[in-house]
Amino acid sequence: MKMFDVYPLNDICIVRAEGSYVWDDKGTRYLDMYGGHAVISIGHTRREYVEAVTRQLEQIGFYSNSVIIARQRELAEKLGRLSGKTDYQLFLCNSGAEANENAMKLASFHNGRSLVVAFTGAFHGRTSLAVSATDNPKIVAPVNRTDHVVFLPFNDTEALEKFFAGRGGEVSSVIVEGIQGVGGIRVASPEFLQAIRRLCDRYGAVYIADSVQCGCGRSGKYYSHDWAGVDADIYTMAKGIGNGFPIGAISIAPHIAPTYGMLGTTFGGNHLACAAAIAVAEVIGRDGLIENAAEIGGYLMERLRSLPGIAEVRGRGLMIGIELPVETAPLRKKLLFDEHVFVGSSGTKVIRLLPALNITREHADRFLAAFEKVLKESGN
Image (cartoon, rainbow, N blue to C red; front, top):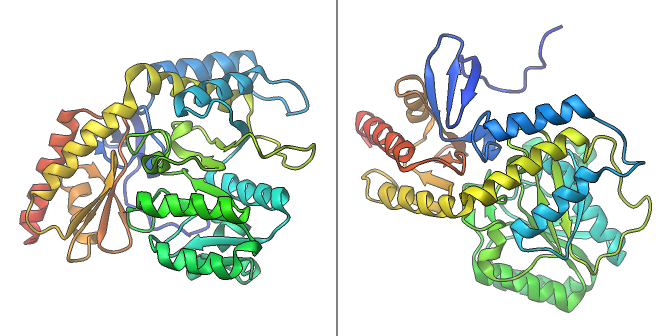
């Protein structure tokens, strides 16, 4: 048997990692400024993280949600304090797509409606309803197509208000990324998110804050939506909360009531996943990593904006998009194979930076020097 060939692969085999560096099977060290799609939040193989998962595995790795799992309650308490949403409720699952699926399903249970409002440039996952709310027809199979999702222009408050004026009574939920990741590091304006909150309140719809990539402190606040000064009804999380261990979650406002059987999962909230996420939450809080993301992210964006040959720098904290006037693929290849720096991309002209939240000024300067060098060599 061979692998199902759906990923274009770089000819690099990573075998070891520590902090913000990874090593290939030839011993070459790379600076990781991408964190595996915003997954690595506290650094690779962080000692406290490895020890927590190892201790848990030595005790019990898994049992089902038919019994009390004390680790779940411990995680809920820590995430509530870290996010400032202490009165919210936690449901645990396995991934960001699953978190978004459950959020939209829960909203529909809550108000009995079926219409979902999503936005141009959105990416909410690859499972059934999540991919239906994703603005990329290439990954939406015929079986995923539905009339239950309507796409409106991102950051267009006037279009949003006009739609609600006509069909607001049909809307079950509005799902929005605080910062669009795959969509090009597009930041939702405070006014836009405030309008979503206001309209959801007026028409009885549920505001779902997709924080899978832009949450967990990456923006300089726990949820990037917090920059707007409003609370969502449901926050979806994954990626950074497990630092590489697969875990997803939804944080649910107290006015949304649960019933038995409404949601369910086999592996969600298992002992190992909770041990990993608890260790991550403890390190983020103790080491001030949300504040560090804001500080180092601000430094990176300020320096990047001073470089020639860049069309625009967007983002908040350590979720940064660098838009170039030309396609980025050749430049990213030079960064990877010549300078040994991992970065990501959004579309063809945006470089995406999603490093660990504890990167230092030295890591930032190492990236900036490499980036400036390949810019000059590429003639940008």
